[in-house]
Length: 404
Image (cartoon, rainbow, N blue to C red; front, top):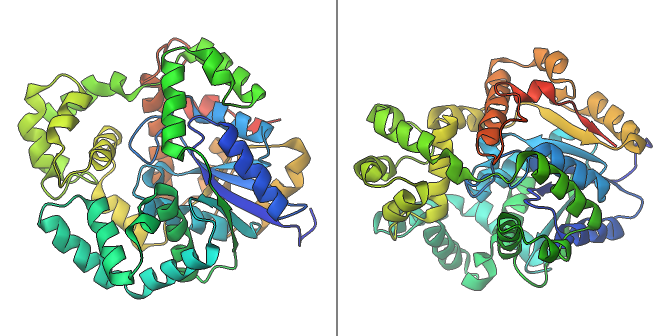
């Protein structure tokens, strides 16, 4: 690989991969000619506290067949997190790669300069935004609404500009680029048509309903057949299949332990504990716990953190000491082997390709983070429709890196 070859970094969930994702990849490569592409992708659990419709290995293969040259995993501590931490961890992984030169992201606005100015203003006035957000939350407003209102009032920008999910992520990417003095060059791809969450959720609904003809029109052909192959083996994954485990934990764990879980603060744990005996499903419970103050997405993340035993003090320790601890390669293209070689030579974090061999170089914090990724994969397969094809515990060790 030529040292000066441009390499684009993209953060994604691909839950599932659809034509909009293909457009983003192709538009990014048009914006940065003769480039390679590394995708930082979440594993089995996603940012909104949901579970991916198909496993990360299938999604890795689909990404590699549709424009990605290499796929690395966003650790679950950050994959199931608010936009601020999700975006910051992704940028830090890209910075640490030593090979990524550009970061591409979609946004409802294609105005990069306005997004950059907003991110700079947020960095400058972040303390005031945090204080204002806390005040509004104390008055009963949910976090996302409180933060949006704080941003709009303090930074003097329109609420519409910052209320879209991809717009918020774009600002957070740019905010971290400035904070870390990153050399990454931002590339913004203007989004059009349905919003990402609407599209992705609609496709997941089609999969759950087994409406495959409608699905075929909305995803690349090779992605469609990869999805069908996965579904024939495992069936779809649905976090509701973990309802029994969630309710068991709520009804048996000491309250102090539940309060130590990430996102279980600010009265969330107390409210869940009070109501958990009245419901036999997570949907019913979280719907009852939801108030003006507690947004449903935040509650889904809290539930996922409880299932995964992600504790607030461990998460804060990672953030205070640099964030992600390694770059875990999930797959790469044979014709991009040179990119993988450059990554392993130039990265400032350990690069994990062979799980058994490469994990030995991790420090104690890195081992804690990696073990949670391994455990989250085992938890993921418990939510699959058919579990007879899984390996039970330590599933990760039975699956090698995807090479096409």
